[in-house]
Length: 496
Image 1 (cartoon, rainbow, N blue to C red):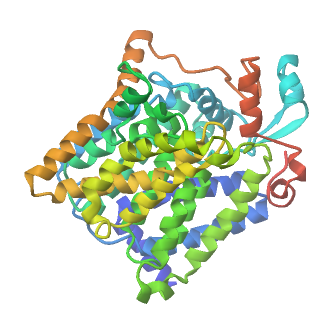
Image 2: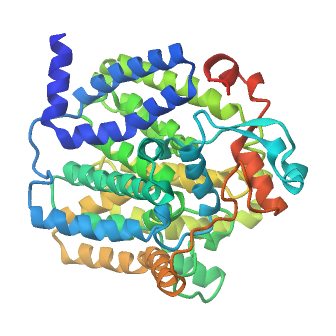
Image 3: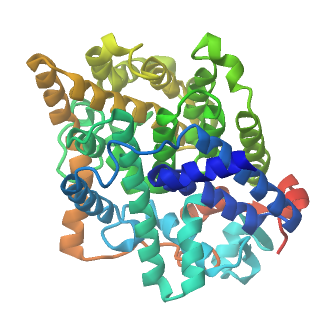
């Protein structure tokens, strides 16, 4: 008992770290409680709570140089700047929304309005919808854990969609601030270099776009200049796939702050609850962390490194697999395109997305944590394809790009030579065009058109469109047909 009291005391003394850990664990507990059968829900919540306390041992320390009470004027300014950045992401519908919100909005709306677990009766849809979707009862299956805490608050307090959207915006903003807090803590500095690089980090998309596609305008979406694959800037991730980016960033930031390897694999495995694609990029980092120091590998044989991955694989793995149509496209990219058509685009993609940073940071590959592995991942990810839009490349790259961005911050903070700083300044001047274009598109459209949330679908229970292409996308991505025949809903999950 004394051991658990010490762990709890550590959480209380290190509130910033405790809040960060709760941010990534709490949605998982909500999923267990809302989707699993009662005895299993109790078991997995208690198990993961125990593992949560064990993980906290390696992260919580008394005191800290960069807490929110240190340099309050700096943190107040950062809070304001980051809030504006998040506000114009479209989260909650308080600013212009990019096209992907046609599914983000109904996901959140249905989690708020429908009982958990969420099922849909397709026989209640209009005939045009049933012609594409079929009829009968389907289960809602997706990696939606990020939305669960604000959805729960909206269920408890009511207040309609406006209050629900406020909860979502605040939840996203809190997550981004915790990410930046953890990065500051890792780098042990308070400097505008950190939020500046985090917001404006990206590849040299503008150069690639100009070479392969020609002229572009401010506000254009530049990331797809290479056609075959894409690596997204941090701003692009926030403005398009915040539900995957924010928790993955926070898990990575916590991972960098770990002391030792006794919970590194367990912590990394939490990504699976938020983004199965990003998990592919997390696995090499987790495995390497276990054996990074040969003399410490035995310390990695812990309950949290074993049980957390197994629990998440069992619960979320079986949940995702209950939708058998979610990955119709998967395989080596040469299966879909000719190698000779890929060679030159890949070389240019590598050079402009990561090669320029490799040249700059080449002397620090072993010095900066996991940097060499991040470059290796980012070089190999494009050779595999998942989904027609290649979500694998876009999301499996999140961990590697995050490590790269933090390494760039560290390089700038440690750089003493004027030449090195000028090189970074020139790189960022070219890279900033992509995130600035995303921000400009959102702010300009908000100013010119006002706030117009994307409501193409509105709800998966009552589609607002008859567009067959959109309906097919929803059918493949979000619905599990005959759910009672799947392992998850037969053995683990609640039934309607």
